[in-house]
Length: 457
Ligand code: PLI
Image 1 (tube, rainbow, N blue to C red):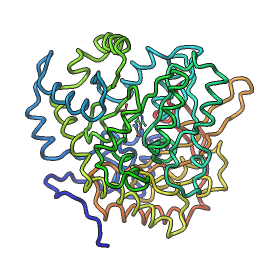
Image 2: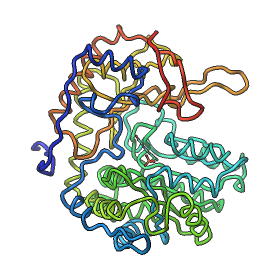
Image 3: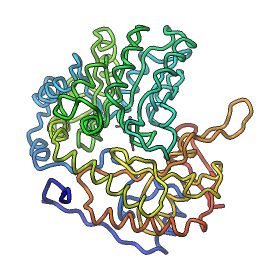
């Protein structure tokens, strides 16, 4: 088979800044060893996130000029609404400035003390919005989803047996909705099968609980279904995505991933009463229902992106480029979450640096070294992000996995950028015995990974 190439030409370029190791050591120290506190211009290859970092197409940029900036009833809204509705089938498409704004509205309405939200795995902002409402966020991934070494197709699936037990234990009246995150970001970017979405829907319906998708990476998930799940090979990505959404009663959506935009999102709903209440909150916190925290041009770009992301040449390149990255690391013996997911490679810090215990944040140590060696920015998804202190015993409770995510922005980097990253990761791996742990010297009460400061041990 021939090399799968980037299905685009480059029309605009942005220079990246080269720094020396000495400069990066100083930058790291000034940033409290937290990659979120490093200035982007001091980063050579930025793999902190695939969220809001996509390169837009010429057609998206053209759409920016077409944006209708009317306060009410803008043409750009109706184009966006039509495309999002056709894709998802939801009666109400409520635009918001990004995914977490949809989460905030949704959980303000259905959350609250005494309520439980099961999810295959909540991402950080989803968990934070559930908890901020007073409700409890519960992750129920299938057991192999938590085993980075298990090579299987759909490791992002929900554990439907555990879900049934959970509903029986807590009572369906205390579970306002069940959520499935596609792809399962905090669980290694792993996809969820159609069969699993169907089964979860069947369980949800049995107990009269609505099912919601956290649909940020719906197109990447649909591509995995097409490639790996029986019966979908001859369906288009759009048909598969439509089927995924057909089992849901609503969705939260961050356009910053699979809508290929730098800002945007929506809340999709079918329930008339919930949608009315959501729009009331929207008007107070985001904006009028036909723009909801976005400019008309943002809505144009998001509408266009939702069409472009369904292109199979794009998705073939996208998924292959992540797989290529993973393959080279595995060949060099670097421990990663296998198989590679849709948007990122996740280094398995527990196996990468077994000499650093969870409470000394092995992932943070790898993140800092990757920046020091190569100017590469990545993010810890482990005990910095999800570890906590037990409320009663005050004892440290580690995250279930210690990962370092190298997320690939969409349409931004070429294969040689990725080859350079591979060389740096392998270098860090070869010298892993030199790595030391970190301690936290200051942290905020919520979402500490964004602003905490660290010191090397
Ligand atoms: O960053 P937002 O507010 O547009 O989207 C929040 C959000 C919700 N769900 C999932 C699965 C996400 O991955 C997510 C945001 N992810 C970020 C920022 C990331 O770096 O993965």
